[in-house]
Amino acid sequence: MNSRSRSTAVREDDELRLPRPPGIIRRFWARHPIAADVIIAVICLLLGIAPATFFTSYETTPGGGLRVIDPPPVITNVILVVLVVIACALLLRRRQWPVVTFAASYAVAVAYLFLLEPAGGPLLVVTSYTLAVYRSTRAAWTGLGIGIGTLTLISFILERAGAITLQDSLNGVLGQLTLALIGTLIGINVGGRKRYIEAVIDRSRQLLIERDQQALLAAASERARIAREMHDIVSHSLTVIVALSEGAAATADQDRARDASTAAAATARGALTEMRSMLGVLRDADSDLPLAPSAPVQPHVTVQTAQNAGYPVTLTTTGEANVTPAVSFAIGRIVQEGLTNAMRHAPHASKIEVRIDYSADPIVVEIYNDGASDPIGTTGFGLRGLSERAAHVNGTVHSVPAGENRWMLRAELPAASDSPPSPAIEDAP
Image 1 (cartoon, rainbow, N blue to C red):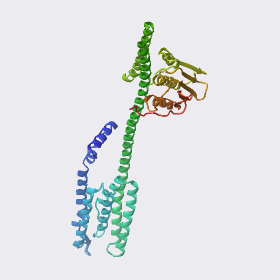
Image 2 (image 1 turned 180 degrees about the vertical axis):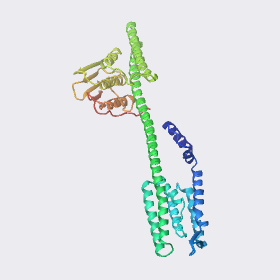
Image 3 (image 1 turned 135 degrees about the vertical axis):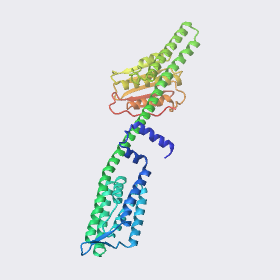
Image 4 (image 1 turned 90 degrees about the vertical axis):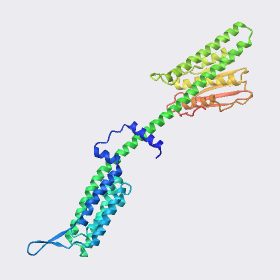
C-alpha cells in the first residue's frame, strides 16, 4: 500500500469516527501482532516441550510401593521435541498460514500418544482458535472433525497394535478433543464478531465513497446547469445589446438613437439582475433559496425584447399555458435561445416566427427564420444546452433546414413530466 492509499484510509477512518477498542491487552494485541505471536509461541513451546523432556511414569510394586518405569526411548523424546519446536515456530505465521499451523498441532498430538501417559499442550487451543478467526466458522468445525477423527483412528490403530493401552488411547483423544473444542468455540465467537465489525466498517467506508461520488455528480450537474444559465443570459442579452448599439450608431435620428441606447441599457440591467439572482444563491451558504431560477422566462418578454432591437419577430400561441414550472421554464429558454440564434445567424431575416402550441400533446415550440444562408453548427453551447433542457423534462429538440434559406428550431415537450428526468451532467468545455 502506498503513502497515498494509507493517507486515504486514515482519512476515511477519521471520518468514520470509530470508537477506541476496549481493554489495554486487546489494544496491545491489535497494535503489536508480531510481539503477540512471539509471546504465544514461547508459551506454547515451554508448555508443549515439557512432557517430552521431563516425563516420568511410576507403577505399584507387589509390596505396595512405587517404582519408576523406564521412560520412552530417547528417539521418541527427540522426535517429539522437534515436532513441538517446528509447530511453535509456525505459530509466528499463524495469521497467514492457519491451516498449516493447525495440521502441525495435530501432528504433535499424535506424537503425544507414544508417551507412557497421555499428555498434551496448548497448541491445539491456539491453532483451533486461529483457524476459526482467520479462516471461517465452517473451516473451524471441519478442521475439528477431521483432526479429531484422524487422531481417534491413529490411536485405535496403535491400541490394536499393542503400542498403547486402551485407557491411554481414550485419555489422549478426550484430552485433545477438550483442548481443540475450547479453542474452536472461543475462536468462532471472536472470529464472528471480528468479521461482523469488519463488514460494518467496510459498509461504512463504501457509504462514504458513495457520498463523495454523489457530491461530485451533483457538483458536475450544477456546473452544467450554471453553464446553461450563463450562456442563455449572456448570449441573448449581448446579442440584443449589440443589435441596439449598432442601430443607435447607424441612425442619424437622435431620438431613435436615444431609445435604442435606453433599451440596450435596460437589457443589460435585466441580465445583470438575473445573474445576481442566480450567483447570489450560490455565494450565500446560508441561503434557503432554490438553486433553480424562481420564475420561468416568459416567451412574450423575449419576443418583445427582440422587437425592440428591430427584429421582425412575431409570436403565435395556441391553447392555454397550463404546464408545470419546469416545462414552462424550458419553453422560455428554448424561445430565448432560438431567437438568439436567429438574430445572430440570420441578421437580415425578413420574418422570424415563434409558434407555441400548448394544445398539442406533446407541446410543440417552433421558431422559423428566412434569413439562414449558411449551415448552422450543432456543436455549440446553445444547442447542446437546449438538448439538455429538453431532456430534463423528457422532451426533444431538433434544429434543421426548413426549405430555401429557412431554418427551423422545433422542440416537443410533455405538458407534465411524471417520469424521472434524463440527467445531463456533461461539463461545458
